[in-house]
Length: 255
View 1 (tube, rainbow, N blue to C red):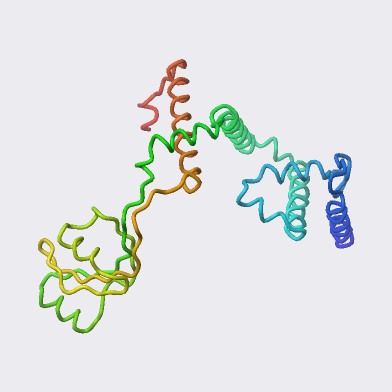
View 2: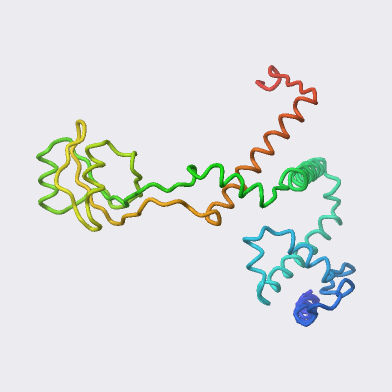
């Protein structure tokens, strides 16, 4: 068993090396690895990589990344072979899960092909029409403490301690007017005097300041894409529901 496994690893290393040398040459028939009577071709290997989300796919741009991914494929083949030997594919529960996965894959593929066909012009048009939506207000990164009495606030100010150990960004319009006026007049690193706003007393420190500005298209492109995709999906779903009779047995669902 050990020798067999070592042989598989040896083939893996050689095949990965061939993969690096292949370059632009047509490699559909190149065998990257053999696992018993099964083969993993370079074409299938590349296809599997292309199906991985971009964020994770970038980790496979190196030799080590490809080798690790191939190792996982080999392990899957080994476990799959044993699962089939034990007829696990005939198990009702397993078959139900496979069918569920199949339905999810097909539904997602429909969404991907039919609903996410959003052109660059659409994204740009949305941005131009909704620029106010992407206007970044003036903001401060604020650290503050709240007190019930003025005496407590003054004692804390004298000691130079702020209870809140972390800071958060606050835009204009998010704070009570009296507190906001003082906070936005502070310089970076400056600590306020005791501020009375409503029934509470505050001490605030500004750690950073951010000027108001219009966000550029490139900054919000992905956000716009997500918005339009969600809108298209909702519209399509509404149409499908309208054209399909859907009956739900609420009483049975409650049991």
